[in-house]
Image (cartoon, rainbow, N blue to C red; front, top):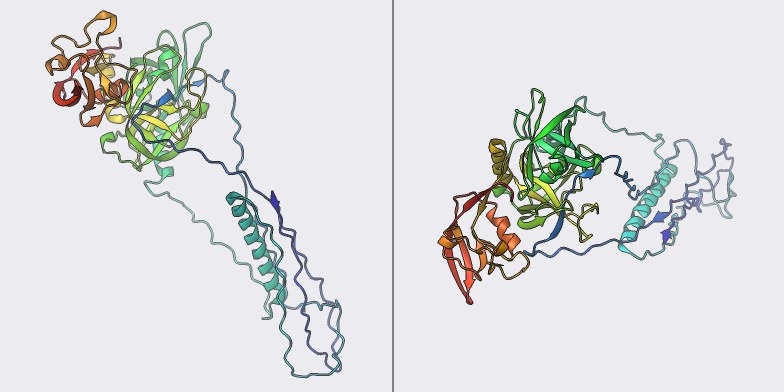
Length: 503
C-alpha cells in the first residue's frame, strides 16, 4: 500500500481591507506559487527472525570458509536499501508582492458599507488534507516521514507569502568544513586505519592439476614475517600448493606454511621475502573480554579484501565444533561469540577490541543450511572466534617446532550424547582401554562409565564441550573435575598430559 499527500495551494485572505476612494495602481501581482506534489511512500514488509536460545548445546557451525578462487566465485550484488525522500520547502520572496485576492484582481470591490478602521475578520485555517491510515509499523514510520516533509514545505510556503516585515528572505549556509579533520583514537575508523596495513588477504592454491583453492585472511604476528591464520584457509595448499599474501597497499608476497594445528584450526605462515617495517598487531587478553564489549572484524568476505565490520561480544566460552568437506579432523574451541558480520573469506582474520588489540581469530559461523561442504552460508549474526590466548600458545608452538601440542586427560569420551555431560566410553578406539593406564584420568581415579559434568568451573554437557574446555589449558595444568558415578556426584583433580601432533 502506498500513501500520497496531495499538495494544496494556500487560500487567499477572504477578508481584504476596504479600498480607499482613489486606490493606487500597483504593479500586477505575481501569480501565487504552486506546491509540488508529495512523493509516494513505498513501505517494505516487516521482517523479523527468531532469537537464538542461550544454551550450552553445541551449535552446528561451519568454518567461515575460504572464499573460492575468483574463477569459481560469483559476484554478489548489494541491493540498495530503502531511501526516504522528503520534499524540500521552496520559499518565495514576498517583500514587495501583495497577496493575491480570492477573486484574483486589484482593486477588490468596495464593501457595501464603508467601515474605515474596522477590524478585519480572522483568516480561517486551511482544512487539513485527509490522511490514509497505513497497515504496519514500518509503513507508519515511512508515512510519518513523508507527512513531516509535507508540513515543512507548507510552513515554508506560508511564511514566505505571509511575511510582512518588508525584508527579503535570507539564505543561511552551514559553516565551512575544517581544513584538517582528525578522528579521535578509539573510533572504529581510527582503529581500522591503524590495523588494516597489518592484515593480509591469503590466496591458497592446491598443487593438483585443477589448481583449486580459496581466499582467507591472516594478520602479522611478528616482524620476522610470520602470519597467523586458520588451518582450513591454507589446508588445500599445504602439500605442494602455493600461497600468497596481499596487503592493503596492494603489495603481494609469496608465503609458505610453518605449521598447522587441525584440532585448534590455527596455522602459521611465513612470508618468503618479508619486507622491512612490518607492524605486528598487538595481542589482547581474551580472558578479560566481557559480554557487550565492542568488536571489529577485518577480512576478505567473498574475496572483498580489507572489509571492516563491527559488533559486540555476544557470549563467551561458547563450545563450538566446526568442520568442512575436506575430510580433515574437526576443530574444537571455547569460542568468543560475536555479531560482527563474518562470512566466508573472513576466516583467519583478527577480531579486535575497541583499542585495536587482537582478542580472537575469526573461524566459524552458525549456518542455517544445516550442513557443510559447498554451501557458502552468509552471516546471520552468529560468528565464532578462537580466543587469542589459546591462539597465541598454538602459534608459539608451531613457530618453535612446526607441530601442535594438545593437553589431554587420557580418557576416551562419547562424542554423540548431549545434555547429560561427557561420558567416558566403555572401550577406546580400536578396542583399546578408554582410560589410559597410568594416564592423567586414571591417576585422578576416573573410570569407564563416569560422566564428567564440570571442568575447571565450567559446565560440561557433551564430549565436544569437554574437549573445547581442555584445549583452553596447557599440558601440566591442574584442573578440578566434577563427575557422576552411580548417580552420585564427586570431584577430583586431574593434571593434564600432552599429545604432540595431529593424529
